[in-house]
Length: 143
Image (cartoon, rainbow, N blue to C red; front, side):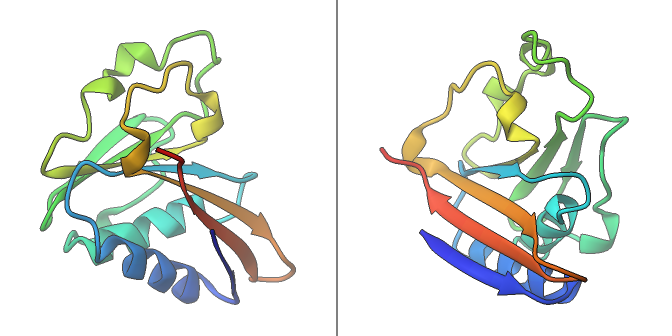
């Protein structure tokens, strides 16, 4: 497990870019944290680290699933509006990320199924730590 304290959006984004720089495809990033904790900022950093345009990344709350091309394709899902009654299955997330993609899931605790290889999963928890600071925990799932 890695834990970091970031003091700005730029630092949170840089932490995520550093993580994504090592991605080879097939990874699933499961993001948790309360509203405003920085999940979308973290995804913006993932995009930067994968060669996608971070300026294109926005909270897909109303779209649910967005795709950003880069060195790898970043699939960005936001499950905030889902009820938790299995409606995530209708999104087809189990077919993602594919060998040339990465799937980032905001509000991952709302997933009803988990079809991915645990060895490729990364759990990221973001918490408010005062002002613009965030406590970020990054854990690889157990295989």
